Length: 261
Image 1 (cartoon, rainbow, N blue to C red):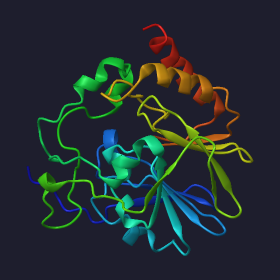
Image 2 (image 1 turned 120 degrees about the vertical axis):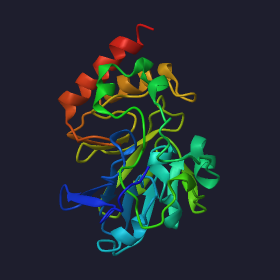
Image 3 (image 1 turned 60 degrees about the vertical axis):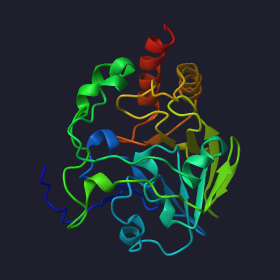
């Protein structure tokens, strides 16, 4: 399958003075992670890093002017592709090995790729995503081989756990352990502003709770916890940001299904 070469791989959108959303428009929606840049007084955060098909650091150097900590909300391939580019990386202790010694190599344009096996518990919203076929719609550069995709180790990774605080000097985020989608899923919670970076624990799209390492009972507990959190805004791992009312709607929708099983 022939694919065009992308004119540029990343796009960015300024959400506020301190928060920028970075995306990879040529990655299909199912695997298109939200990459969040949070500017702090003493240090910046890069929350998740996408697929790693092009250099995130090279793109972001236009607005990075201080040390950066890259956080993995979990270690799925669409969230950790560029963590190896950062000297300091944080991940939940139960998934540290997934950053230090990641596994994952497959053909990004394999026409046999099928997420149908994931659909059992996704509700009808799966129709919002392409479920078969190539994972990219363009090449990051001339000569790129889509069959060569692999995750690279992030030697600067270290573990965090529930209750740890990531301090940027003028902003502080508490680590919330939010298992279910994955064992070590985490969120970053800034109580002072009601801001939650939720990773894939919750987003405004089809939640996935039946991967081999997922746990629906854990996911139910996570959603019960999140729906009572006094959020003003949720910046999630996929799809648009949303507020407290939508958070409760999403949580209750999946709780009705999963709690009955």
